[in-house]
Image 1: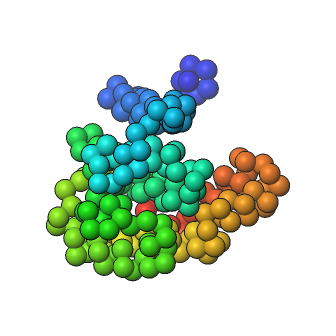
Image 2: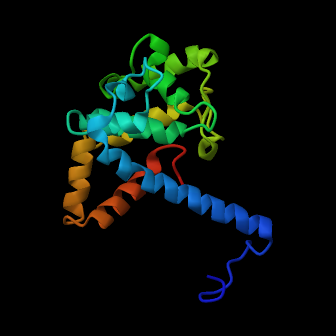
Length: 200
């Protein structure tokens, strides 16, 4: 790129360039990961969608649920994105939050009706939660402050429910973009600025 397009500032030292390249590779892997997983949907264990199982994986759960319950699938994608996958503990944090530490599953139906109940649950149970945020989400917190998971979830619920549902939100974006998926994505991305901690 330096030779054909122009100098990229800040990546001249080898260490800086290596960090940028590794981030690009990691980001690309995250995008490419989904297609093969979707292709083997028929061979996935139903336990991928069961937060009581150590096999729980929110991305695979969303794939399993997307045709039967797209609202729950979207909620699981949000949880996966908010928590991130931790290198050592994998999806444990997503599993603990979604599965309510085995007490009750925090489904989209429950959380969208009462996000304050979820926030209160996180506040009372955060010391029993052993999962960790993923590397790309390492500055997130379960604390009940302005950056805490409870408020982030409440802002997400408010954003989605201002449209009525995930499905209505996507339909409205598609209609506003006259069916252009790239434009619809851009509009949703801009609209999502009201969700806390999702600026990037």
